[in-house]
Amino acid sequence: MELRHLQHFAAVAEERHFTRAAERLMVSQSGLSASIRALERELRAPLFVRTTRRVTLTEAGRALLVEAERILAQVRAAHEAVAAVQGVVRGTLALGTEQCIAGVRVARLLAAFRGRHPDVEIRLRQAGSGALAEEVGAGRLDLAFAYRTQADTDRLRSVPLTSEPMTVLCHPGHRLASAGAAAALDDLAGEVFVDFHPDWGPRRTTDAAFTAAGVRRTVALEVNDVHSLLDLVDENLGIAVVPRHFRHKRPSLTALPLKGTGEAEYETVALLPPEGATGPAARALVRLLESGGGTGACGTWIPDA
Image (cartoon, rainbow, N blue to C red; front, top):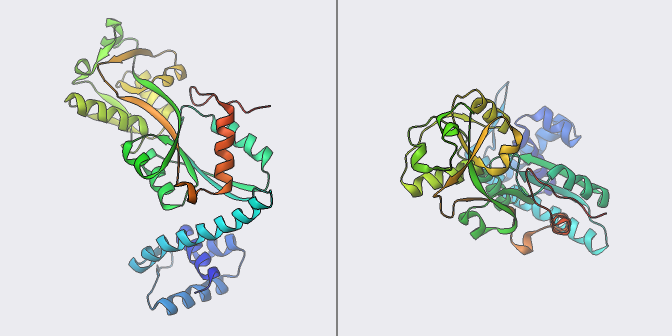
């Protein structure tokens, strides 16, 4: 089994299309097809189901993809480790982040990193915290900025970013705004809720708090971006329980402290694989992050001069 065969296979699996994969790899489509056929002959199993419109993985293909990604990640790490010994950080930095993560300003951090390490190719993926933790654990991401859960940090290393209480956001005309007092979870029973998908950190925090308090709630309006959530609350279509820094994004909304939630805080961290599996580029990014020393709403990280 040749390394290039695995590289070709992984590209087709990701693109779900032979032509796009060939363009990305800068090889001929016939050469790519021959490479996949050679791999299938060696493994004695079909890896893809091909139709005129799309390409999908077979069960054997899905099993191979897990191992292929692991092997290719180890090869990249080997190249990067040798470069690091020579005093050069190069290769690829695959970073994941949840939207509007607290404790780090991702764009500014990456700009500073690129200025110091121009030979590193940066790849960024935005997703929910659950998916990001799985990607780091599988070696598909070098690190991720995500919401902390005990399950994630038991199997991955974490660098704390910040923690903050959860806050109730509602329309100024809502009954909670009129009361003008901190809200308990019992006070929110029966309300219409706007919230994120269950994979998101704020949703995980809120769900856990309501479950611990024994208060049932139903999320009627589910979104996957911050501004849609704020728009729905701004139209008085529901209320939201969100990290405190969200209140600064829409000053027209009423923000009320949430009381009686015990230890339910929104904690964000940088998730990394075990020490031996962390590549030089990821280690350099963490050093840069730690040297900045700032936290805040959607990140207030300020790089050193």
